[in-house]
Structures are given as structure tokens and as C-alpha cells.
Image (cartoon, rainbow, N blue to C red):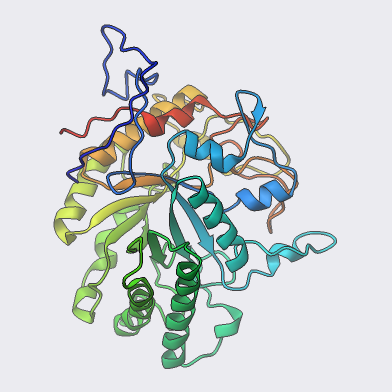
Length: 392
């Protein structure tokens, strides 16, 4: 991506002699902070849990001082906040004892998050799961309200749901800059009708295009304009996924999004740039890493088992704040070298609190956050304002 960055260089910082400015392997303490605009390079973070964590006792600090986490993320260079939207996630109340009264990841909660993000100067990516619960490569379950619909009625439901959400956001001055039509849709979405495989490509594209068309229609004339993202988990799966779908009419999208997790991808970090370049050349679309993470510790802040694979950690990037910073700066430079449009960390604010999910109380991700166990920012936050080499 030919990026012409608008750089905000802090005048009080000094360039020390002998600094290797643009090598993320050698320079993890930058002499100058660089704030990137999202339309040049996305420095994104998924902030979907923040409202729920704040409601359940979570506290965020910067330099020991309690602060609004939305303010913290923006202050450290986040230019796009990502929010997932479930259809009717009543389970987010039922997991509490007694049941809670506040639903999360529904329209009201997501609208609140978008409002906070935009107030703090961040653009927004809306992640439509088209499910009442998590949609990912292992499950793509239609909302309860859409069960047993004919494919024609399902098509109309997808369109109307998507159009109404975006129109309402637009009317409130909260139109997202990016919209994902589905989340990690490797098997398709809204199964079984929306199965991408088993000679079902025509039905799959018919349903997917309903969501895409709704984004286009709701976004017509909107300010900001909206980019459509199709999101596949792990870069090694993308070629097979797209093969032949253009013949069925899947052409109207702007960005190919990928999840890239060290735990689950077979693509080594130092080869990611080649994958991104080849994908961009093959499909003529921008490439975004929609989800990624790396741990800063192998310890656990609570009794909720953490999601981490210590056996797959690189000795070059140990699970320390310094190792996490080195990994993120190296990863970001790989994306830039490949011509990619940016990246999102997945739930880097999921600190421990009294928040509950279906599987535990606290956080299964506290080892992967950009905050320590006391909620203080880690120095790995600085990867977002590192002076990367764009080759300009």
C-alpha cells in the first residue's frame, strides 16, 4: 500500500545519535512517536469487552493513574476500534447469578462503544457475527429469530437487519468506517443454508451478497464512507476459500481480512509479508489482519484458565512485556512490507474483573493484554507509535 503518512512528531523528544530508527528488531524504544491515520495504516484494537469489564469492577491505569480505557487506547495510537455485534445475546445476562439486567454485544452496547470510540477520535470497525453467540471457523449458528427460514426469507432478514443497524448508526452520526460481513467465515455463515462448501457456493454467495448490498445501500452518501471486509481465519486458508466464488458473483467487497494467531497459523512471522503481497496481487484488494495477539506473560491473574500455547512461543520473542513489544513491532513491519493496510489486536483490554463469560469469571486472556495484572499499561502499547519503514 503506497502510504503517505501524516506524522505528528512530538517536539520534546530528542533523536539520539546512532539510533536505528526503523528496525523494529533493534529499536523498541522509539525516539519519536508517530501517530498514523487509519486510511494510511490501521492501528486497530478490538475493544468489545471494555463496557462489560468496566461495569464489573475492572480498572485501567496509565502510569499508576486510573483512566478511561478508551482514552488510553487513543493516547497510545489506536486509530480504529473494533466491536462485535451479536443478534440477541441474552446469554450475556444469564451467565450471572442472579442473572444480570444488562445485555452485552447487542445493538445498545455496541452503539455505546462506538459513541465512546468516536468521541475519543477513533474510527470504527463493526464486526457482524450474524449469530446470537460466537461465530468462528468452528460454528456459524443462525440467530434463534432466524431459525428454519427459507433461503429467500433468510436473505431478506440478513439485508434488513444489516441495513437497519447501519441506518440507525448513521442517523446518530455513528456510521462505522469498516464493516465485516461475517466473522471468520471459513465454513460460510448462517449454516446450513450459508455453507460455503459442498457445492453450495451459489446459496452462500446469495446470502453473503445480501449483507454486502445492505452495507452499500445504508452507506450510500454517508460520511464517512464504509468499506466492506470479508474475514477468514489464518492466511493459509484464504486462497482455497476464495477459489471460484467470483463466478458466483462475489466481487463487491473492499478488504480481505485475516486472523493471524501464532497458536493456530502455519505461516511463520517472517513469511507473512510474502503472503500479504501475493494475496493483494491475486485479488486486487487491501489486506487487513483483523485479529492477532501475543502474550506478555505465562502467568495467570485469576482462576479462569488462560488461552496460551507456550510451546509455540518464539525464543526471540519471550512472553515478557519486552518480548511482546518486539513481536508486535516485527509483525507490524511485516504487514507494511507486504503492502498490508493494518492490523487489529484482539481484546487487548480483557483484564481480569468480575465479568463472566460462559466459561469462567475474570479473563482467559489476561496474559495477552496490553495491561499488567493491576491494569497498568505495558510498554508494548508503544508498538502503535513506532516509526515504521514504509519505504517512502
